[in-house]
Image (cartoon, rainbow, N blue to C red; front, side, top):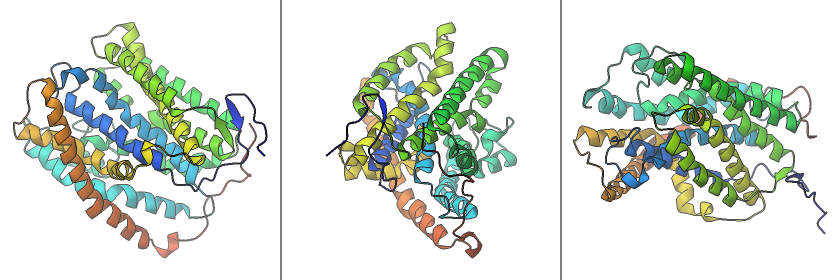
Length: 397
């Protein structure tokens, strides 16, 4: 017989969830986030831009630029959700992270250097240090790289993720000692700090400097912390009475608010929208993650559990790495078209091409390299000892 639960929105579950469960719904969601970024790049950043603009998608597609926020929040959630202190060494953790992100990144950078720097219309100029910074994924850590997104441009987000991966074991040690509500407060204050920094930068520094500040990995730590905080909450048995549908409706309602006010030139209200879009998308993202995770823990299946979508989600990292190259390669071949509603077919064909290339990169590089890299971990890193917390995990509010 089930015990009576609290009627509050945030309540305790009868038992902590099984955190070893596969979260196929989140894998599928990764594809939609990557696809949103693709549509944004396809449709362009500004009016009269884009490869073959679909007019009825613009400016709504501009929200796709912030699909990367979903990845930042998801990283925090998944790492905190699956981390088991004492089951691997710190070096082993870093070894596996490197094997997961670098092989596909390095291979995808080879055609990117040709497409963006050798064959492109009016190719960007770069230098050795900037290129090396992109290969080692530290390009956003420095303000003087040339161009501002060197190498494969989309990998600036991997530069952000790299900082997350480096700091995660130590953030975990701090978070595990804190009450759940304290974790939520820390994440919330971090999001407020993001807004304050962005708002200040838009008025007090140049556009280039402001752009670099808002790509700096440190700025995105609150999004990562938000994902971690909610993972801790679910691990400790907290549940949120929430269905995915209200969250999706919230996202749909927010898209026109952002799209109609954050495309310049804009006034004070538009500046506020631009300064809060990352935080807004982060909150929507974590609510969506929690809603689907809770459904999955309850054994409820949805469209996101279909094998096709799960596979697309598995390929989404590679799709993200190559999608802008597919678009730029078509530019280089002079295939760009004037804006037209029929361009939606071009969008779908290019998405299919990108998916095919992503599948090849995943099948031939990412997955084999990950397995090989993991199998060849140095013996010195295989110690079953990790930086475990000094105190037991706090499970109270």
